[in-house]
Length: 160
Image 1: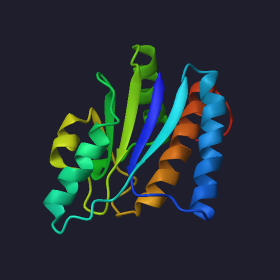
Image 2: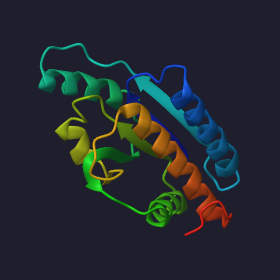
Image 3: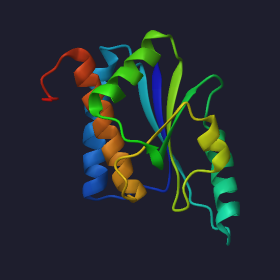
Image 4: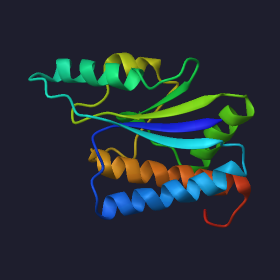
């Protein structure tokens, strides 16, 4: 199964980029042994439209252009479920075992994801009830992907 993160906004050089790169590499290495063939990240430029609805529509179109058919979509959304790491790992492992070709994690811009993309998502997850900047959400998601791989592999990284 291929895993992709499609995020509105660019992650500039600095500590967030370094941390994201570290978890990207860790998941890529651990995931290949578990049947996760590829991890990719697609950065979508933020829309410059004046109103939020137009921005979300433009960003949704750009996100959609990167989604292969029959993908499992996961929305990162402050209204989503708060999953513990073990449940998150079970979802990822089940989709892999069911033969899903692609699992796509979508991170919206400042206005969030469009209602249409949220409806298409098989799962919506949140990292708590706080609102996080997209840079931090990306780092937290990549860490959770790596943690999920270690849980699925029985590695002691996750000590719950």
